Image 1 (cartoon, chains in turn red, blue, green, cyan):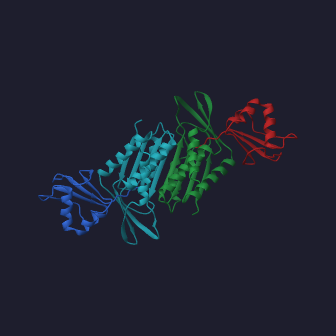
Image 2 (tube, helix red, strand yellow; image 1 turned 60 degrees about the vertical axis):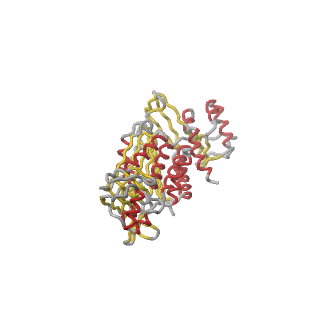
Image 3 (cartoon, one colour; image 1 turned 180 degrees about the vertical axis):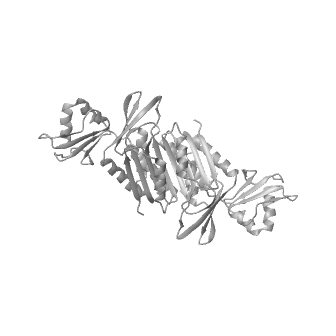
Length: 81
Length: 81
Length: 157
Length: 157
């Protein structure tokens, strides 16, 4: 099972959960498309500027291979301090 | 009586004191000459860069009139904080 | 010089002055300590702030802050760095963040604390949800936060 | 905005963290507090520092610091400023100075504290005599202290 996490604004519209990635969802682009198909609000939000995608606690850019062993986190724009 | 005060390095070689200014010592230049005549170490030190002269708690530059009613302070280079 | 780095994410209120006192006790080589304390604001424009809820990404956030602190320790001669960041639900005037930097040099202490705050504002994985007049609003970085951070890149060349 | 200005010259040891806690309690509009604490250094090069004696010009020094604080309060949107400066004979690691600046804005708090420290170092009427290996030495400003202060003049234009 892959672990999906959502932070900030995105946590309002998607719940953290463990999922069994369907065949074909083998990279982060495919994961975004798969989640977007069920949630048009997420589909818009995930494409906004300032988000980050984190796989196994490391920031990734562009399509990145994923499997059921991974933790994948969607980060809305951060604001600490 | 004029009140003379010396701070920092200059306080090592001149003592704070009340003095009766002699006739002719009517400005700060004359005061410096008068004190210098008795103390050659002061004579050198008072001419070094970074000193300040303060009359009645206000910094002055150049020859400034003084009288027996005044407080005159010689400030060596400052260093706080 | 090895810089001691202490990073704490706190689920409960912390006392920034007691933390600074403890920090100062650990120092042996530093004449200068610069510190920044951030507290929950009471107003946003004309609206009264009711609560601020801060969340983070456990593990990842600490790793990020640790990396930022190590970068600061390479850039400035520091004896110690302390970062405490609250998470959870807070009320106005409660402390959110404390950054303290200790050095033999005044400028190094100031610049390191300033640098860490800029990075915490714009880079560290924290999210803020402010409730005003019963409505929750996500707070996202402002243009000036990015501009503050950009100051440091200019002298990286 | 009126800025509350508190200036204290202390003949006896003071507690910089307790002072900051008191300062923070006075605030109602500030989310940002920047503070600088200076303590007596333990070494000067290879020499151990035995004591530091700080003197000031009573009345005049306070007037100068007050003027510097007012200038800072005109330059940045500040809610409050606190300056505590020790005088007398101190031992290594004893606090010499605390400057704290509170504002709604992080940059204003940092810059005001930094500015006040630069002016205290190079302009305020304090004199430092350090005793090392039984010998007293007057400490006078270094070129870098004047350079630190000059940073602020550049943007006065």
